[in-house]
Image (cartoon, rainbow, N blue to C red; front, side, top):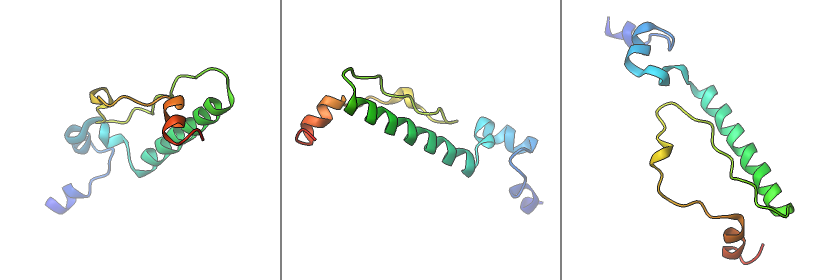
Length: 88
């Protein structure tokens, strides 16, 4: 019986009851969210480097079980990054 329970599909009622929203996200969903985040950062970096004004940093795709509001580290601005890397 334990083998059957361990191999239930992600959309089963038991898995949803145990893991909640995290059960909806598999490897494919996490990889797609990472692709979207990386593309948004790449576009932001390009716009920051080639524009006159500093655009707002893009927000990452929210993931289940991710506590982003607990982050306390300040994100450096493009100007601070350029100064750190020697004006690149």
